[in-house]
Amino acid sequence: MPTARMVVDPAFRVGPVRPRTFGSFVEHLGRCVYTGIHDPAHPSADVDGFREDVVELVRELGVTTVRYPGGNFVSGYRWEDGVGPLQERPARLDLAWHSTDPNTVGVDEFVRWARKAGVEPMMAVNLGTRGVAEALDLLEYSNVRGGTELSDRRRANGSEEPHAISLWCLGNEMDGPWQTGHKTAAEYGRLAAETARAMRQLQPDLELVACGSSASDMPTFGAWEHEVLTHTYDLVDHVSAHIYFAEHDGDLASFLAAGVRMDSFIDSIVATADAVRAAGKHDKRINISFDEWNVWYQDRAESRPPSGEDWPVAPVLLEDRYTVADAVVVGGLLISLLRHTDRVHAASQAQLVNVIAPIMTEPGGRIWKQTTFHPFAQTANLARGVVLHTALEAPTYESARYGTAGLVDSVATWDEEAGELVIFAVNRGIEESTELAVDVHIEGLHLLEATSYAHEDHTWSATADDDATVLPRPNGSAAVAAEGGGRGSRVTMTLPPISWNVIRLARG
Ligand code: AHR
Image (cartoon, rainbow, N blue to C red):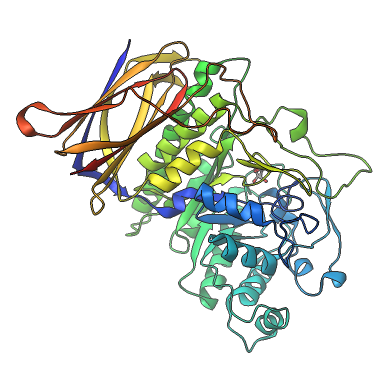
């Protein structure tokens, strides 16, 4: 059996585990909002029409922030349509997803839902068809206590307290030719800078995210970030990153190596941001808001919006059914995000319900967990304290898409106060188990729990009838022993083929 060796030392810290790494995304797209989080006809619906059973699973998932209302949707969105008496709200065509939005849910409802779900709302403004004035209006409506036309309108609409939204995206994927109001880097950079400047005049302590590239293979990737940040450096805090992976042409080995591309994408964005920092003689650093990442099968029919005369409300769109292999890839992407906790300061898995989502619902009916629910929930609920540098030596293989990949990838978090170390690891081996041997420079560790998420059929996916056949299961091979010389502990575990694994250890 191949062996991967790792050394973990609590002195070598990458940075804090950031709660915002475990964010998600709710877009007015398909059935994410309507018949997803919002379904007044559902037996569990609250007074606002939000499904309680969805809220419960969102809490179990451990989601911390939720980005809203898009995505491509936001680039044609008029936020005013979604506030005020329901019977007066207009239905509008959504050009991005060729749908009709009834505007039953808007910013007030979303913030109420977010408070109920215990998540921080992250708001995007429309810089596609709109600009500085409308962004300021939304900020005034949301965050000013009262005494102005728009803040008093919010109060009259039933939200007495300000929404207090701190984290704002300056548009969405403005580099993409598919984006309504698509712009060049120079056009967008100027608009983002002016919008950020004005928003800060209203509220200086906002956290602002400038749009980075919508994928690592965009022809403008790199040059886009450089130009946009040159315009906005002093005015924003983060640059966004988006990436989606899929298995192409049955090349599972490459797909399982997606984390390799995620790592290099992050490293390239950091390098570009730091180049702008040096060229502009700036002190502060720009960090990354990885506000869209996931597995997404974009070539499948359900990813294509309707067309022609048909502009449905809440059509079935992007309802990918995820396999065990997809979940292992999601786990690998979480490892990459944690490993870069020094520069990735927020992230949103796209999306939360029904649309490329860990949670699925039937309109008015059942709810279930997709395979991808499990790695996210385990990481969000167990990663605490600081992320540690790991010296990892694993056998490698050549993947056609992403080059050399380690058979195993892993990261560790250390919660000094609780005395708890957690090791997260994926085995990318398709046929074979791999032995993981970790030398931990902490004495007296004992095993709390070791689990593996794997199945002999890696194409297995959950349904409304069965979402529990494959769960993270105890892995009996995990063991801890005192390392010779009293320097710490030796942790070993056999990682099954195509698996996501978690080892929890505690001191004392
Ligand atoms: O998450 C689905 C879509 O992917 C978003 O609307 C867009 O921002 C991205 O291209």
